[in-house]
Length: 170
Image (cartoon, rainbow, N blue to C red; front, side, top):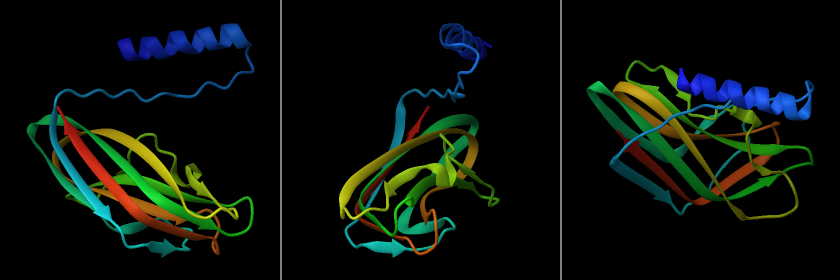
C-alpha cells in the first residue's frame, strides 16, 4: 500500500505542476537485503547477430537457485564493447531474461524489449555500453540470460569483451 501511495503522490504532483498533458512513467519498485551470491561470466571473443528476433548471447547464462519458502531480488549487470552498423534510424538491443525450471520466461525490469537501444547504427565503431536489470522471484531454479537483437534485419550487432554479473539478494 505504501508503494502505491508514493506513486500516486508523485503522479498527482507531476500533473499539478506540469498540467494534465504530462505523460507519467510507471515505476517498478523492488528492494533486497544482504547479497547472498554473486556470479560472473566474461568473454573476449566477438559475437555477431543480424537477427531482428531476440537470441541468446553465447556464454551469457548464469543459473541461480532460490530456496523454498523465500523470495530473492536478482540483479543483473551487463557491459560490453559493442558495434551496431547499418543505415540510420536503426539500433541494436540487449535484454536480460529469467527462465524458470518449467520454461516460463520473463524479461527483467525495466521491461523494454526491442525498445531499449544498447547501441545505435552509425559510422562510429566500437564503444563500451552497459545495462542493469532486476527482478524479485519466488523459490525455484532460474537461468539468467543475456539476449541481443537488431531493430531491423540487415543491421549487424557485434558484442566483444563483455562482462555479465548476477547478484542474488535476500
